[in-house]
Length: 101
Length: 255
Image 1: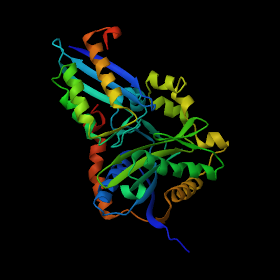
Image 2: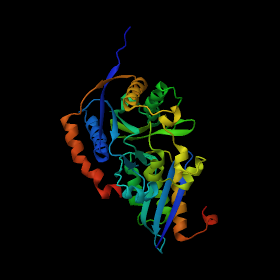
Image 3: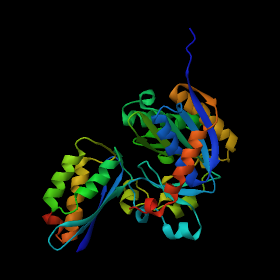
Image 4: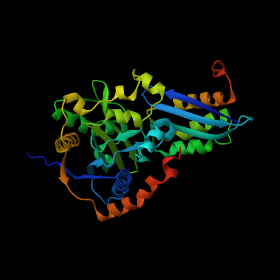
């Protein structure tokens, strides 16, 4: 199991930090989404953190997109969240940045 | 024709960090239930303390060793945004608790409307400040006030800082910002990114002078008459109950 972290500075000037603990099978075991952004309602972020547990990257991205649909993020975008997840995940599984996209 | 302004309640008080955060939450809950009127609260946090945003991780946003060593109270807010050093002798915190329809349905516009209270207050001191979306007020590019807002179905709480004479060295010792954040602001330390009214006007304004300016500023920005008032028994009791949450390590260190 390895931790992977991504730090994204959004266009609006906010910071998004994602920490993922990914096991050797590529499954997310722990997840922290943090930073100085805003989310309405706030529960969205907790919901994403919970729902990502047990997911591989593709599922994690799909679940996140689904959950953000009815919420309003301020200071970060959905794309920031997805990029952050991708980077943190790839950092955890040890892939080089060139293979991210 | 005489247009009468809506009347909001004005509360001016001070207290310890946990109580102050608990009271803001209590007010929000009771406003949501229509049990209290729209309110502007101006307060000092004594002794000085640190709050972090709802989504922040303690280890990324504050210098925990320093805070512990100096026995500075620390808690997590129910609002998003960044970490704050509340200087008991150099900062006034404001909170606006109001019906969303009275401030603005649009979140960003409501930030701007409320933050204008700070801009107008600074104007009284001859300082030209501007609202910098999403939630800052800046003077010559340096932050003098930051705000954070949370919403329930009907009511909102927005609280924020007014740094009239904050000890900025202490502030930069307490708070931590990722390198990425500082670089994007073109500065190398938090200290370079912030300022105070005292630093700008070259004298230390008195607390009563600051409070008067804030009252006028918010009254103008919100288009309301502020009527000095007292907290209700229910608010005090609810705040008392909520203190435990703000002191709880499970809450503060949940991330």
